[in-house]
Length: 132
Image 1: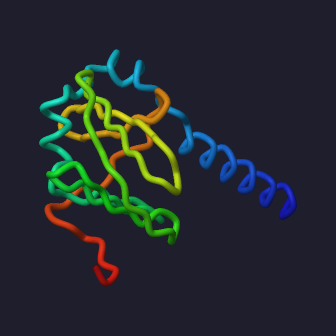
Image 2: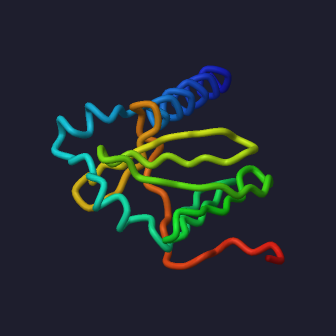
């Protein structure tokens, strides 16, 4: 009986964990009423601000430069917003990477390769320091 109880707890935990990791696509968010952010909205969302999430932090300077701390690796580069609202960051150590955002009823959600990577914290100012 005890063994069966442990098995059921284990099964429940695995099932709950898998459902919590469900992938949400940009298309699903838009179908549910979210809107893709345009170039003006995206620029206002990031310019002069720092975006943070576990292990990564990027400061988007209003002059088009960026400073990043990505998985403990410091990097500098540039950023731009395309006419379609995509943010493209170019850094020598990582190359060029682009992503976009959708406004999901007030929650600004980052989209990478068509998949939601969740809501990231965005705060005013530069929140990256390393003796510069």
